Length: 305
Image 1 (cartoon, rainbow, N blue to C red):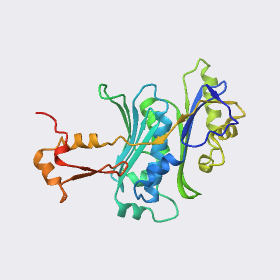
Image 2: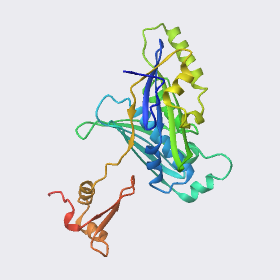
Image 3: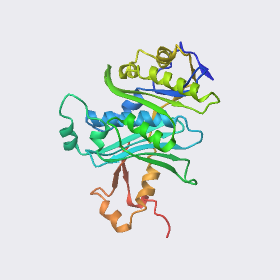
Image 4: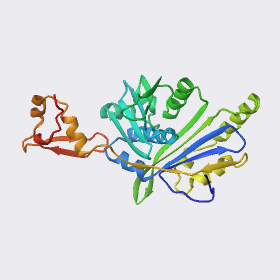
């Protein structure tokens, strides 16, 4: 269903939209509390938090188009100061993410006026998108080289090479001063879709949409006073734009006591014995949400055999 462009939908959502009369579709993401929770779970340097925020926003933009129950995983890994960044979108609207990095190397490349981007932080490596429909299905994965200084350019390269779909992406992450500094993120994705229009008309429509897209500023994606419908109208009102029902987003994590117990059960007994601390418990920290689990050895779910 279409959405009234005069309504302020708030944050933590993805709004699908279409350019009237043109074979162009898109999605706009606005994240407030959801991305702030993810980025503040660990004491990330600003450059690393920015990269992870971009990955989470991209995962929401792409994952919100899933036509099945499952999840989309966006990740990139390389030989740079950030070993890898991963963001996980669940078809129910849940988001989580994590970065592993070398603090000294990140500090070294962060000197100067410009915040280091994806290429500088990740170095030589690969950009990966994975579709996971559950344990009884085979994962679909696409891999492309890390190209371009921004995570958005990595995504555009992926769609050009793996999906052969003309795609433009813009991502923004920053901090806003509300009741204390809070992280915000925003992003927009537009794609040319199959159409019955003549080839020339299709190319003209895509060129026009890209021209409007180029006017989009990072400040507009992050501005809490500019609602998603208002931003869409500001950008595409000349051609006409229709927004559809938004999809909500929230920070989440899949970790649980049962999952941790099952994970520990995969280790040999002698290795588990070495993990036991002085109080008789094994402690495991979830790398995503930083929650610490304390498990007694007799609570470990050991697989038979």
